[in-house]
Image: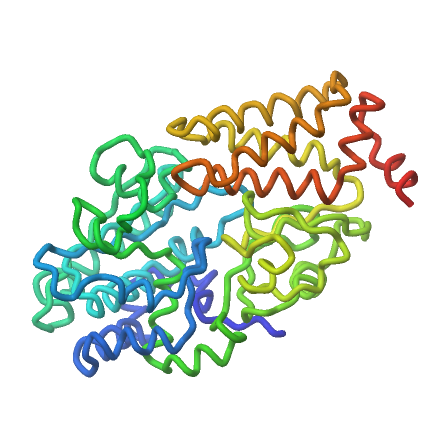
Length: 429
């Protein structure tokens, strides 16, 4: 499938950050159409028809999510934009923030109109200094030109937009941890239910959407939900930004229709494996997504197809590993991340992530025991479904993926006290 540039249309174009240029090229016409020619429900209906799903990781249908917000609630409603992109292998939203900030702002306006929201917050990763500066300048421009504020684009509709910088905690990318942080509290996830659509920011109904999700709204409103749905596949409409990294010749962000096979992304767009070595493994959706083997490279990249094989599309951070990569070392890298980023609120996650990291590290140091592989699997299983948020589940899934798909490498480390990828490959063959 060819690259389809919807949200990546202006990537690499320095002028796109300028409001005047953006408007000269059709910018804010979708927001104007929504505000002056469409009722809020009509906007939501188009988003439902588009089959646009949440592109931060969970993949929940966007229009359906909006519909959960009570229309007759007397409390104010809020929109929070999750720009806390912090999972290893994921860097797609940064491209939108740096190259096309007004597309995001336009999407925020469209969402706010559809749901009846008058105050929105962008929660941006603290380490994203340059994206923050670019986004801040764009928001200031939008206020100056009457695109935000008391009368959005001249319509009798008020919308204030604030940017809040995180402080480097991955857990604040979890939607309720994000809300706690916005309220000035420790970013500990909340028990659900109630869900944010009912009891969210400041105990008010709240929509939480990802940067990429909102950035698609411009095209959906201008060209229609059916048009967008037809670009993708059943229940997975439109395109997706895939952040490709690892042992590929051309790493980067590629926008492709939903349903594109991983093989096409890696070999056609990514140029294949560095040194023309053999493909060994793929992480298809950020650190939480269970690793896949080389013989699964033809799976279409959709939420549903990857779920069928025990993995997930998640944040669409595709990490490619060749035949020279040690899977035990790869698991240690991910285990280190989860152990460091566990917020510590729930015992299974706090203790489990730490134990997994220490055991895998011990194996790599040559001090593994015959019981270590079984202990790792037991720890991973005990983390699943036992914590408030999905961090523990994601870590558990990632660990079990390595242990079930590459058991011979873990057994070799325990038996020989060292890593020899070539020798393991020959033994398995």
